[in-house]
Length: 138
Image (tube, rainbow, N blue to C red; front, side, top):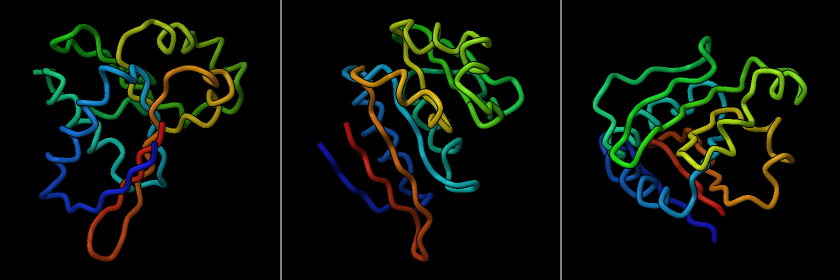
């Protein structure tokens, strides 16, 4: 499956609702996009749709932020600072990814191979002149 949507920040609520609906089938969601593409902003909106009531923030330095959603834990991971799969494994990131709970992962490139064959949704974000574009693939 591959779908593409165009949106502005005013319409991010609709895109977040769409992605939140996919999470019942895809407990792990990978977010791709350059710096400033809107990964964290979109994930904040998805968390709201998943029933997270606490403030959400980028886990760049914490690496993992854990929130309580309506269906259980929601993990927001940022793997930007990792340089190798060994570092990822030493940090215990695999325990989150294989926990069965919702994992929203920014900068997932290092864990792609480890997650091959798993039920993962891939979300690519792009900045355009008129707004944003999102491509969703499973």
